[in-house]
Length: 150
Image 1 (cartoon, rainbow, N blue to C red):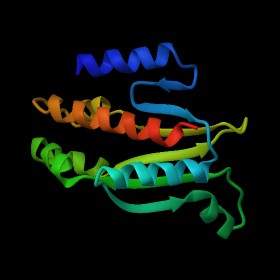
Image 2: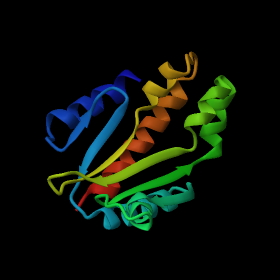
Image 3: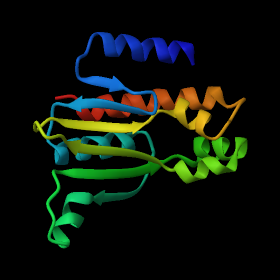
Image 4: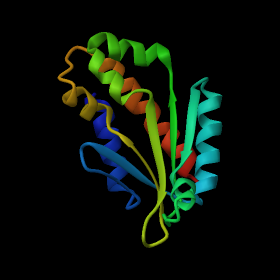
């Protein structure tokens, strides 16, 4: 876990386009929301991940006469890793499968955000599953970089 945190810290130091507030990791995309979603889908499929749903929140807002900047939620997972976390503590199932939020801020910048797996361990008081959480954190980071790169 320390190696992963170190790598993430280095990424943050050399990039003004990523931040973490402890609970949420956000990486600025060089692409539109739609293109970031497509790149993420491709990266997930390449690694054999299951994409369960894509929710277009802006489209939903439009259907009720509201406006929302482009905002899409990609729900995906891998039962091999998710099941291990649920075996550690079943309440984590409320946060699984994994989610990536791709959204445009008020300045027109596009971001990809996801839950920090370390936060999920703390939230559900899980101990002894740090290795699997580290694997998940590493995978999420790589998926995010693949989706947000130019």
